[in-house]
Amino acid sequence: MKKRRKMVLWILLATPVVLILLAAVVGTFLPETYAAKGRITCTLAPGEVWARLHDPKRFPMSGRMCRGVEVLPTENGRAVWTEDIGSSQLRIHHSEADQPKRLLRLVEDTKVPFTARAEFTIEPRDTGSVLTCTNTATVRSGTWHVPFFRVMIGLFGGAKSGCKDYLTRLAGETGRDFAWVE
Image (cartoon, rainbow, N blue to C red; front, side):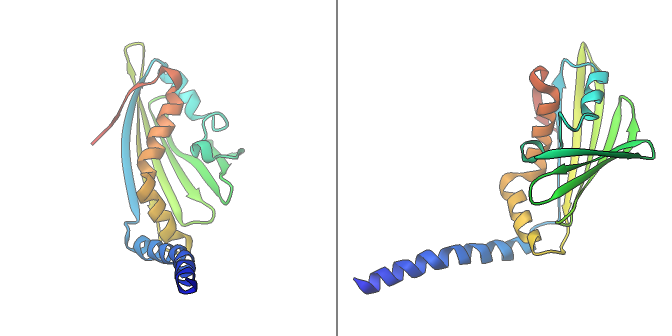
C-alpha cells in the first residue's frame, strides 16, 4: 500500500513538471506569426466607428484583460496609449490614418517580444458601416515567456479571437454578420 501511495505522489508531482517542459519544447517549434482577418457589419455611421477606434478607454485593444488605459501625448499628431494587462503593458500607437476610411495600429508588449499590426478599414454600407480588421501578431524568440505565449496563442486562437472580440465590442449591439475573410 505504501508503494502505491508513493507512486501516486510521484505521478502527481511529475505531471505538472512534464506538462510545463512539454509546453516549453512545443512552443519553441510553433510559428512566430499569426494572422486573422475579420469583418462585421453594423448600423453605426463611419464617423461613429472612427470615433470608437479613437476611444481606447471605452474600447481597449486588450479587451477583458485590460486593467487600465493611460493616454500618452500624441506622436506626429497621432494617438498613443498604454494598456495595463496585469503582468505587462501594451504600447499602442496609430501609425497611419485616413479618416474615416483606414487606420493602422502598431502594438508592442513591454515584456514579451510581441508585436501586432492591426489595420482597420471602414466602408459605408446603406445606413451603417462594414468594419474590417486585419490583425497580424508576431512573437519573436527572446525571453523564457515566448514558448508558453505561443502555446497559448495556438490553443486559444490569439489573433483570431482578439480580432473577433475587438470588432464585436466596437460594433456593440448594432453589430451583425461577423465573418472571417480569407
